[in-house]
Amino acid sequence: MTIITRFAPSPTGQLHVGNLRTALLNWMAARRAGGRFLLRIDDTDAERSREGHVVAIRDDLAWLGMRPDAEVRQSDRFALYERRFRELAAAGHVYPAYETPEELDLKRKVQLGRGLPPVYDRAALKLSDADRARLEGEGLRPHWRFRMNHDGPIVWDDGVRGPQRFDPALMSDPVVRRADGSWLYLLPSVIDDIDMGITDVVRGEDHVTNTAAQLQMFAALGAAPPRFAHVALLTGAEGKLSKRLGSLGCDQFRLDGIEPMAILSLLARIGTSDPVRPFASAEALAEQFDLSHFGRAPARFDEAELAQLNARLIHQLDYAAVRHRLPDGMDAAAWQAIRPNLERVADAADWWRVIESAPAIGAVAETDRDFLRRAAKMAGEIDWSNAPWAALTAGLKAATERKGRALFLPLRLALTGREHGPDMAELLPLIGRDRAIARLAAAAG
Ligand code: GLU
Image (cartoon, rainbow, N blue to C red):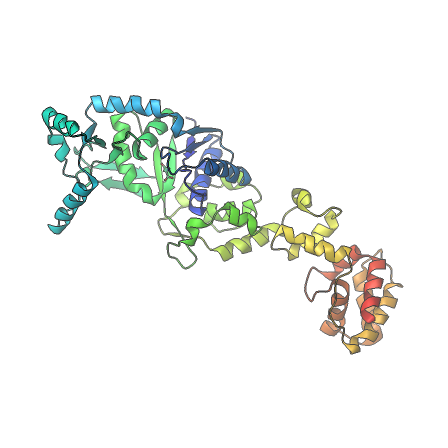
């Protein structure tokens, strides 16, 4: 059987890290099995859905390298929902109810006051045809509830949480359609999962109760449900559900110079027993994807860990993979030299400038001037074809008895304008003989 998964975001905002993780887990589940990964835009809420968000969702997935095999939009599928809804209504699986939100609120308060669970009392099921006609005569339009089957518990073997058991009698019959005819999330999602042949759904544990209700909807529609797996939600570094994570998405990652593979490498592994490490490709991540490694403890998403992972990833990136993002003229040797110092690929441009153009240098200590003058002279005498930094520093060490910081720092400052940076042994050949001599001489004054 072909594995078919889907990512079903509502285009009511930017995708946040939690959404990206859900997308990734479903993408990996499909890729690993040679299956299909579908994008379903859950845009039944016309008021809150925005076309701009739909475009951003596609862009984010493309940027992260998770291209869907197909895309559907719920707003294109109302005829299908209508048809299946009618079947459910004819079979008595959905029923009209007329309570106002205020009435329902009052019922709940009374139940809670009596120490009872606030479960809908199914008063609407007791209405006669005459009652309904009267209510509609008063101008009331019904909303629709799915009638939960109370014969026995709802059970499933969750891909992450293991055996699950719910008592349907403790659940309110969920509202599936509003009085204005618009759809709530639960039912169209089930209709789509059936129609699209979805075999596996991985989603956040905030959907566990929805799954209990939806399993009954699959049964009412005469379809076998997909396998469900609910992963623990993300928390911030401090272990708490964090507001920031709800607004952290690809825009911010791009701004921060975070590589797509750093995000994917982290999101694929947090909440699992596997170590977090940089992966070079999403395919390599997918190959090692195993749902059974996910635990029930909250998954910590730590931005500092992401930044570190990003740096580790960049330090391994091949020139070929980044050359189109590097300044003109920057070659493989320069990338090799600079790479270990980068936290963001974009910062390569700063170091390239350091190599290419004379850096601004601060005041040079009087005691260093003579040293730098000698350095400039020696730079003209050494063999530049073979390890010039070793030759230069060895020569200066012998001639001046300077060593360590006193030997290296004035040279680094004069040559790069900075106290720290890439290995000078790699940088100096890139700066080259003429520029090095000029910089050392200029610093000597
Ligand atoms: N649109 C729903 C959400 O974003 C989809 C949930 C699901 O995976 O079924 O929460």
